[in-house]
Length: 549
Image 1 (tube, rainbow, N blue to C red):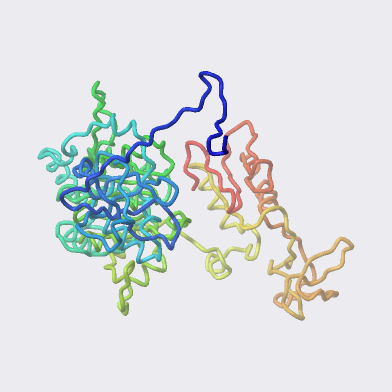
Image 2 (image 1 turned 180 degrees about the horizontal axis):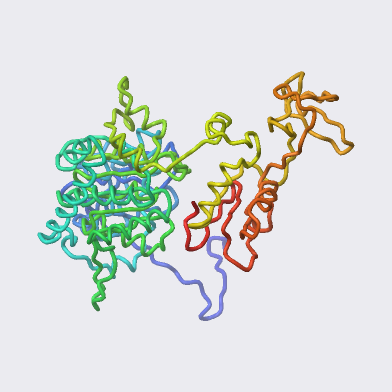
C-alpha cells in the first residue's frame, strides 16, 4: 500500500465531517447610482478620504446619503457614513467590495451638515472622520425603535408663531431704549443673508438670557433654526428657565402611551446619557426641534436653513475642543452661519481679542472662520446707569475725601462703607494673597517702607534686623523720606492678616474665611450666618440665600 492510499482510521461516529463548499452568493449592484462614497470611522489622517463601495440592489432604497452603513475595510468591519452616491468609480471594479448592511433606517447627517463638515475639516486642518466622531453621538439602537416624533415642532404652528412674534416685539421694544443700533440685528434676523455681530452686553445676571431669548423668538418666528452654545451647564439651566418663561417647551415625552416626544428646544450636551443625547440628535436632524442649546457639543447641531448661531462668552476655555482637529466653537459657528446665509452673534460682557479685531474699522482680509462683524453696543447713559458703583480708594481719592488714615490697610472711608453695607446684607472681600504677610510702613504717614538703594520693600527678620527683600541690603537708622518719621509699624496683609484686622474693627460681626490653605478650602463651622466673607481669588464662596455685596 502506497502513501497515497494510506488512510487514518477512526471509530464510528468520530470521523471528521466533510464540509461542502458553498458558492458565494451572487450580489447585484443597484441599477441607479451603484457606487457609494463612504467616510469611514477611522481617525488616521492619511485615510481621511471617501472609499468606494458597491450598493446591492436590495439596499438601494435604504442606502441613501447620510445614513450609517457597515462595511469591510482591510481585515475588520467598521461603520461609516455614505457621503454621496455615484454612477462610476476610479477604483477598479475587482477591488470594490459591497456594503454589508445598512445600520440606520434614517438620515443621520443631512446634506447641509455634510457640507459644513467638509468646510470645518478644511478650515481647521482635519478630516471629515474627525468631525463625524465629535458631531454624531454614539448610536443607541433602541432609541430608533422607540422614538416617535411629530411632523413639526410646536413653535411652527400658527399660534406658536403669534406668541413668538409678541415676545419679539415686547423685548425688542425694551432693547431699543438700551442699545443704539439694535435695529441692525433685528433686520438681520428678519432677512435671508449672512451677517455677523459682536453683542456687548449690559451688566446683569439675567440680562444676557433675555437678549438671547429675544433672538431665539425672532428667529423661530421667521422659521429659522437657532443654535446657542453656552459655557457650562449652569448657563444652560438658566437659559432653559428663560425659554420656558417666554412660552417655549423643552423636548420631552408628552406622556402618551405611544412614547411621543415633543418640544420647542432641545439640549445637546456631551454629558448627557447616551440614549437622551442620541434621541435629541435624531429629533434635531429630522427637523422636529429647531432650537438647540448646549455646551461645545452643540456647535455641530444638524440644523438647516438660515439659522441663528449664537455663542456666549467666546473667550472661555470650554469653547476650545481638545480633540483633533482642535476646532474652536466660535470659528465653527461663524463658518456655519456663513455657509447657511444665517446670522452669527458673539455675545459677552467683555469682548475677546477675536471680537475686538473683527469690529475694528481698519479690519481687512477675511478667513474661513473670521471676518468683519458689526458691533452692537449699549448707549453710554444706559451703560453708566446699569454699571455697578466702583470707587478706587487710592491716596488721591482719600486726600480728596480728607481721610486722616491715608496709607492704612483699611482706611476709615472703607470702614464706613463696610459698616453701611453690613446693615443690608453680607459683604465679600477678595484678597489677592493667602495667609499672613508682614509689611513695614511708616507709623505716621503710613507709606510703605522702601529700600534706599533699590526701592525694594523692606522686611523684618526673626533677629530683629531689617533687610531689603530684593537686594538684601541691611537698613539702619531709617527715616521716612516724606514726613521724616523714624518709627515703623508692621502691617499684616493677606487673607488671614486682613481677617485679624477686620476682627478688631468689626467686633461681634460673624466672619468666615475661605482660602485654599484651609481644610477643604472653606472654614465656615460657626453657629450663625456669616456677614463678612473674606476669600482669595481661588476660593470665593457664596452665602446661601444671599448675594454678596
